[in-house]
Amino acid sequence: MRLHLLLSVFLLSLAIIPKGRTGLIPGQKQCNRLKGVCKDGGCTTIEQPIGICNEDKRCCRKWWIFFPYPTPAPRSKSP
Image (cartoon, rainbow, N blue to C red; front, side, top):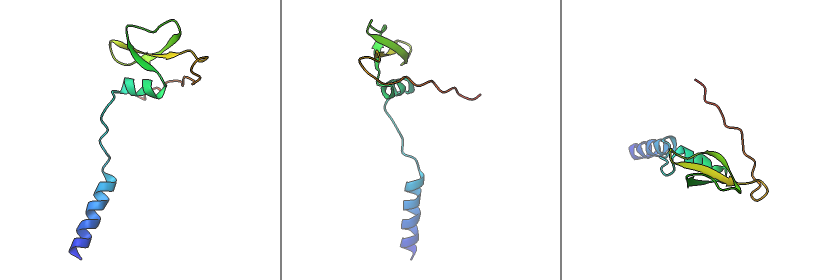
């Protein structure tokens, strides 16, 4: 009975605790969601800038004719 209780508490805690997500920084993550590429310097003539990945890199995506994904309006953060 005691083992059953301990096992159920353990499984419940595993379900509640969120998994840690590592990897991309927020600017790169948003760029990947918009089907863009982070580039040093700037975008070429057949690409449009759609955001900033970090201080040095810009998020670029080909024009809508070549890569038809709509650019969503950015969500503003509440103060």
